[in-house]
Image (tube, rainbow, N blue to C red):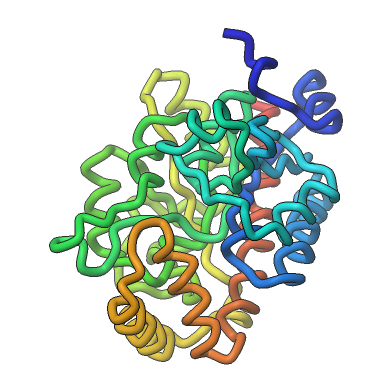
Length: 305
């Protein structure tokens, strides 16, 4: 297989790969499905700038006309932000999207796959998918968790998305052997809040130490990713009780409207933003920027190792 048959690597990213410079992969679902216009474009460009200001090269990943894109032009970001025919692409959809020459934004799972193909080891996102509330009846479990168990990419996030069953998500990750690291925290952050009531597996206080864990894990041929959870800065976090109330209201609405499958997460995030009068969107933007900065620092140390 020739990767060039499927993969388009942006010249800036290709130059960084050739020179062994630090690179941070970024997902594109936040552009097409996670935020309203124009916040989506502004956030995507701001996050790329944050990676650069922390001495790494950003590589936003998407699928455009069947091509796996590693690094996007501003025009491609605008296309994803404004085209309502852009699909949400996870692992199950990748081959179909490529063979049918479709366009789509990448979830955590599909971003990990494409980043790994391009030999990018560190990826920043807002929050990961996980076990949905009520999964004991619906079996709604994100493909992100399975991908973390099999693909060698470090995912830096603010914890599982707050709309999920966080306890069951942690149990699933434990079963799959995925290390869950808290950056400067012993408590798992819950996306909009730095608190969840659940502990991480390990607290690590330096990006250098995280980079050394990645190198050691993969040197030992222990397959799979590492989840680094980075709490939202306290100045921007939302009160956990208020957030849970908003999420519960949104879940009731989703149930009434029979929203299911891959449509559920964007629906709930949009509904929570509406209920919180925009506060959750502001928090989302801040936490993604915070994660991008940490991911860049980890990537810098990982390349040096």
